[in-house]
Image (tube, rainbow, N blue to C red; front, side):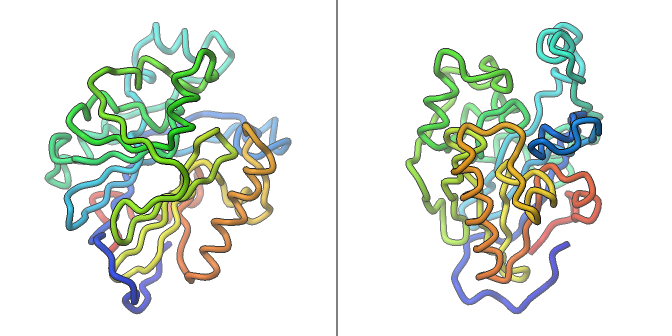
Length: 268
């Protein structure tokens, strides 16, 4: 949980951060922790983060497509036939429901930044043809390649209406919002560092570290494109946490999510 600290010294464009809980995935623990917990099944949260900035609303990741939890044909093709359980998305998890509670419409969000293009991170991109969609170039190239992998649902992001904004390595979206190249889990994974006016620095690893175990014990995610880079990503983010005195919000941790302020509550 974020503890209030003295105002940060560096300028920031970010006024508030909202955690949007977009549903749950039912997975073997070993999907998140390499070679650990194969017999255990976790209900892992899927999140997105909405930023209220002086340049408008910015969405970090785009959640789950509700059809993957409701349409039998999609659930069969994407999950059941592979021995997997389909995600759980209730009405309260719908992105539009949570945005409406904040008085925000899809049309109000002019910038979407994606950590990567797995189905639990870009599922609602079809709502943002008007927005700039920022992603690492390597991730975009891999996702549009001939065989990106089972977790890439191409029909959810291969949309000619989308306005892609491609980046190479670390970049700053605006003062107080940095995106870091954390390749390892995927070819172009990126994580975010957000500076808030009251709470200070917040680190958002996304899938560089799913669970507290990944963070504390430096356990790799179950799936990586490069194990060495995945370990470097965890260690880099942990160093930022130490140096900044910041707080880390873990994307998939079913325990950590219970202590977070979920939208419409937020962090300042």
